[in-house]
Image 1 (cartoon, helix red, strand yellow):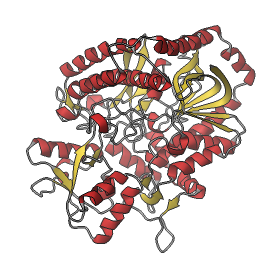
Image 2 (tube, helix red, strand yellow):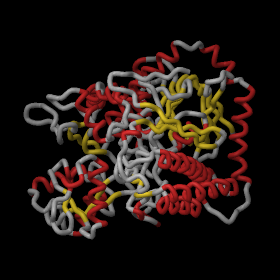
Image 3 (tube, helix red, strand yellow):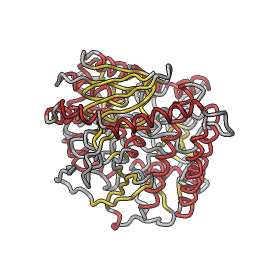
Length: 572
């Protein structure tokens, strides 16, 4: 059955940014908002299990520019200063809103927030996602459709030479009932998150989904945007997290929370030898292991009992598997140091600068299409509050956009014959997978092949995250052989169909990522983009590496840096 929906604003993804954008839209406008979430907004996205700190906050004595400078240094200059500044100016404001919505923020005896370093404040955040979900649902103009997986944007072109098209809705299916959804919308906000599962993970087999980033973020938002002609940026700045071994729990809770240093198996502190940026901390660990001085640890065996108790509680708020591991072993961080390792690489704009190429209003290069949170590029280190800030900016921009557009204009767009034909083609593709006969390949076998290719040839764990031009060319060839096999897959039910499309999305993101890694001829971020053909940083590459999909081929676009004080805007 095809279910037809009409709305003013379609939000694809009900995670951190999606829920908050809906909340803000409900507060500042009367526009109808429809959230499409493939899971359930109550516990979906990166905050599903909670979080124990807000890692982007302007602490007392600092200004927003302080945060901009930190993020820019961590990314070695390849950022959008304008995006970072507009985000940073709102960090404390959205934190105030969160607290009013019910989030518990820890305070000292003087009523001030308890800080964890210069940019972080401590929270009791186990229920942060239910709080955001309630804030979205409580608005009468907001409709939430859980278990709705969006696969494609609906795009209408005006025929002009430079117009990439206008987003006027999306198409998807219910992952439980199998019903198809054809959604007309005057404007679309992508808030789907980044991409995990591209590479072979730390824990293969049964435990393969025990990873740092949400295993359900498959790059869907990137893929649908690429197919719609949207421009992407900086995919080559991958994010690889330094995490507690086996549980893949965050290490910042220990490093910042109790001041634990990174040490090798000889007990030597090594972090100062490599640098203290996010990528350098990882690079130091990888290098020590390669040199035969591993495994590596966070030195916790000198902490106090009170600090140990704080760590137990902190991880229960965010990564309970780490606390359970300590309890099951009958030991804790005070008794033994915590072993650390790097994760598989991810594409995530909340920690690095990869994602949609957007302007300061969070508009993409496709008219009527906005992006916020992990899916939006150019603005790294945004974390929770940065995603909220971008959600608020995009919500305000969407209201301004809608006020300039007449409702009658959209009726003709939605009735465009080419648009209808494109929608029908997508729905027939859903049917095709259901009609296929059982073939030689399964989603799981193709996914494992994809992850093995990326791991071995495109800088995965097995190579210490390094790659070269020849390996990338092999990765490109091998990924290209997998994509045609998608058409032979059989979907016995809607859940199978979901997994097919998740694989389809990941394969496209892999192609774009490989093209980005090939394009940047330097090593600016150790491990994140460790190019052994170009092992040094070069001033020639102080630029953005962007891309678009043209005729199903990845076209690389080199853009000059947006200078401090400048604000970039699209010209449609």
